[in-house]
Image (tube, rainbow, N blue to C red; front, side, top):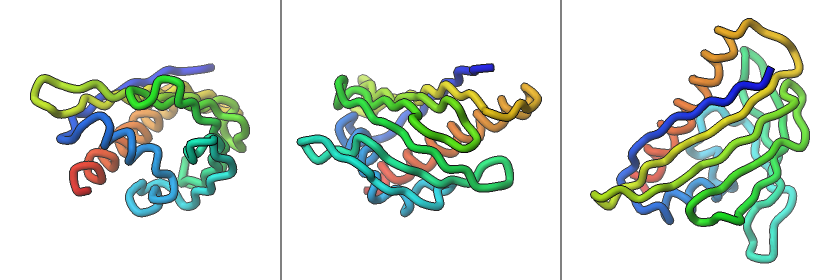
Length: 146
């Protein structure tokens, strides 16, 4: 079963600054609390990470996955597709950065997840909510403090 989850947060910064923080994978371990390891495997001609391997805390254990990033809508959006995962068969998503009238940014996080191991729907929904909520809180804190 594939589920789609979405959440938004208002961040007191420009969309460009939010985009810069999200795409600075070398700094993730300083602010992304659930991540244990991040390795940039490939970069494009502009130096942006296009293939990134992650190890994260999940479901009381560690999970590893590799994502392929798409910058075709940059700096308004950065999206990704999972190309390899031990617990997930699909972990696709996007950050979308929309300016507000106040000069802030509405950051939307979309996530499409499919697990290799079946778990109860309510557990999966709770996990998705935690993943997205934690990511947005951590991002907001990092962006607003930098």
